[in-house]
Image 1: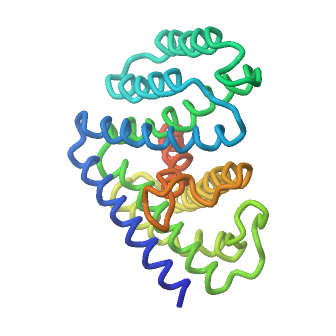
Image 2 (image 1 turned 180 degrees about the vertical axis):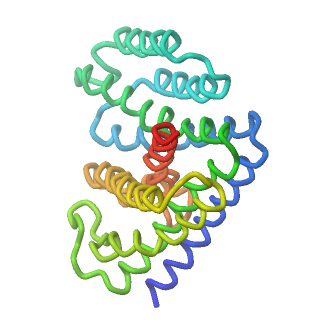
Image 3 (image 1 turned 180 degrees about the horizontal axis):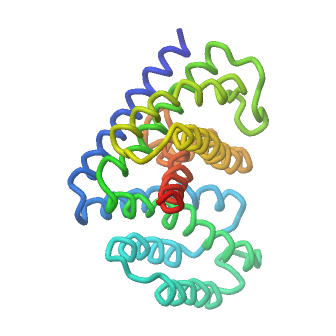
Length: 268
């Protein structure tokens, strides 16, 4: 019963998030960029929370300003090389100016590594949603819906039939049964969406996309869980009561959206 109640809460929370994202995707325009900026702001705060518990303090301005710039560059289709160099120089400059760190410990290497990883993880990868939206509303919607379906199936199957743990030290509730059977249950939806929204795609494409969504989504989930376990946190934050923060709810999408975008680029 507890598992069922938890599933219902997860479905409701996930459904609300999906509806909000769908609304902004449908409207498109700069509102989608604003949605990403909103996510970057809260997700960065959660990400910093991990590092702060290890007494490492990435430069807030470096991460946020560069993180804010990337979605705008993608939206306005600005070639990334020159502005990317300027943004990287900006990160280096701020970090060097603050050497040897904002606290007593000289964590120069850790701080600049944390800043660069945070920008990639929280801004560059999610910004591929903007590039997907430029290909079409339904195309941008597809990885979101498939990820939501996969996560729901994985949780349900794992709760009912999961006996073999996937990586118990990182995520005690994940099982091989849930991980594998979720892909099988998600495949029919991938196939239907392919036929409705991507006429040129074949059954092989549907299989590869389903496998990618399952593998990358699981890795994204485990990556965020690993960061939490490293610093002794159950949830990234308490934005969603009982269900953690933005990273807890959207960790799978951070890898699945760029995967789907990359697949489309190579498939065209």
